[in-house]
Length: 197
Length: 197
DNA sequence: CAGGGAGGTTAGCGGTCGTTAACCTGAAGG
DNA sequence: CCTTCAGGTTAACGACCGCTAACCTCCCTG
Image (cartoon, rainbow over all chains, first blue to last red):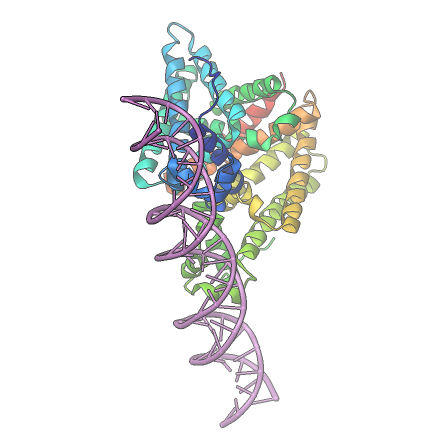
């Protein structure tokens, strides 16, 4: 994946600000005028870029779920011959990167799903389910003593743990990104390990 | 604490249904007419019991934070001469009970805080902060190798783990309340243990 | 240098929502 | 038997919000 150096498009600006505002005040708590103001245009101006407010949320949520799943699949594909522990570590690392770098999206991800149109919601749920199942498989190869339902519960719980980043204080006040990432990583592994017996 | 056997008051009915609806669709996503309908009266009828929609949310959030803190303080007070590990287990158990029995409230608790009036929000945050600090102290007696900021981050993360109950499937589909509670408990302990080194 | 599309603007419509006003009713109390 | 009041009702108001309509203004291109 090439690193982006060019300026973000207007669409991307809007999505980013919309994500931040939705995360802060909830989907229904933010007006289109505010989203517009956040990128320097007026409310109705947004309709040159999106079909409506719903479409912004849909694109955000589908994007998040897709990115998470794609990233996980890539990590799995690159893990040929690597011990399963390392694969799990890679999954954890990827999720932590996402949770630390895109906190508003992580917040939206499990908060505003029900505001989507039926078709979009089904799509997002499907992507999320695939992501979870992928984790479950890897977790069960590392911790074979876990039953499948138990492993699934454990995965959801670890997601809760990793997604707690928005509660860890403002980005500046953290003890350093690397330190936090390592802490979360260790805790996730510890939680999985303890899930067994 | 005596077990309630008498019928819930109308106020309590309203709060319970409002909590469920707020958790499902967000504070702004629920109309007063819906809340009224959920208890068999019409929207404006609610104003015989509450000053407004905001007041319902405030009472819910203050109630949650207060209950959590009070319960934790009680558990700490009862723990005279008990080994610190057992105190931590008691805290974890209390939080899990809450997370399993009052899922809508757990959901609201970290989701709709920003919709409160300034004074209410400050109160809730203060209660939450006390609750966290109480955990941090206990955690640090059990795991002295943890620095204070690290312990606080770990506590927040474990809250994320324990509060994942709403994602674990509908109440019926769980592998049994006791089993789930034990799993969460083990994972929480495992996460704390791994937070050290 | 015409012209056309991309990307803005403001005005305003239609619907929804929280809240209030005004009224009703059944049960308790003197 | 009359009064009172708790706890409802419906109607309606005012504010807000998502979205459309109509218009404007660059900038690119043939």
